[in-house]
Image 1 (spheres, helix red, strand yellow):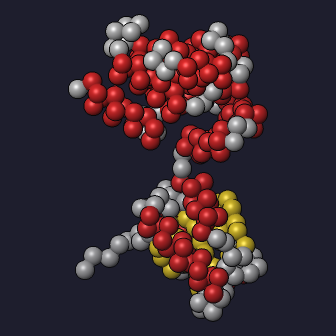
Image 2: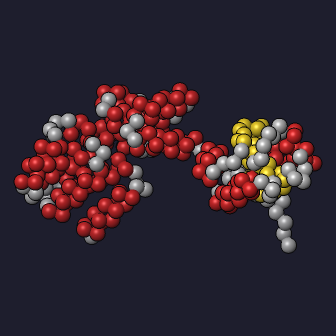
Length: 286
């Protein structure tokens, strides 16, 4: 039988604390849980953390200290109640949580410990973008850029947000500073182009009234597609562009297909809507 020398979940031994916890924390964060079966919320916290450590497949380690068996380490780390959590990273205690914690709070803690800075930033931005809170989203990005002024990826997100907020001049200025080879630079550039084009197309409601009267008018369909895309109504925008594609491939040099490609670039390749319409476009064309 082969014994894992570095199990992901382990009982904390004060005699090997330096190796098991401090040294290991220089490779992956170590979550220390002070618990006991005699306290139900502590047992629940242990169960959730054991589930998470399996799901995250070695991205963090879980050290368990049963205070019913040994309270020395808990006293040394000034644990006040049970359950109690200490996070050790790079040899230092970086965070602590006292009292019962729900699964959502524990998962948030693990995400914060294991996700890259760019992944964390995207998650934070997604929350504010979903609610249209451009100011807080921009504040998060500004802080990130201040910390890493040469990070072109942050500038991509900065320019993209400025367009969505309606600051097209600011977006143009930022885009001009992003090297052309930067991944995803196309997204803010395309969003800016669509926003500028939409600015000269009038009001979406008026276009929709005209379109209701003549659904086959491809010029109106194109205007509706661009206006919807500029307003963040991506599925509607893709549906209008799909109609053009299916109706007349020669209309304005296959602009239905080109418009679908532009809109999908705003969503990212992994977005469900983009996947759906990419399949529809492919099936129609082939």
